[in-house]
Image 1 (cartoon, rainbow, N blue to C red):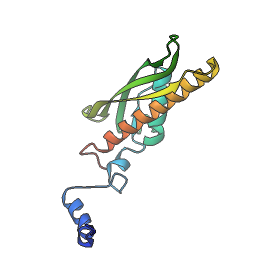
Image 2: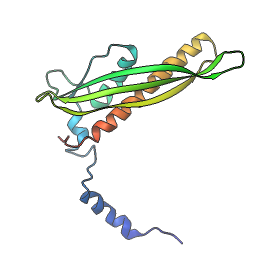
Image 3: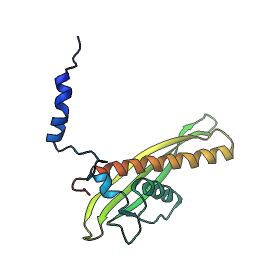
Length: 163
């Protein structure tokens, strides 16, 4: 016996509209309110460069004079051994990353959203030195994309942002 009911499917849009649901990318949504209007802080390390690069790609790069918001980000990473053999060789490494962010209105200086996001990625260290360095670089880039996605999701969920 199926528990699917067509009436539930028909009433779902009404329930979502009643609870204040608004699509992020709809006209007037928070996605359009932020795109091209956020100046991301200048990077000071390679990892923060990768994070800022991805944030600018998703938020749209804005001219400093035309931006309404400023986004300050800082990132901290730590590499730890995840797998060590009986001969004390490291086979797998994990990079833990934390990115702190703060979105401010340039007009008022008020902080509209702030917080930090945390995640991790792993990579193999069992190959040659060259392959291990390439794996580390790729893992760092993947981590910055993950942290950037989390920051963007939180910014889009910020109440009060609309175009």
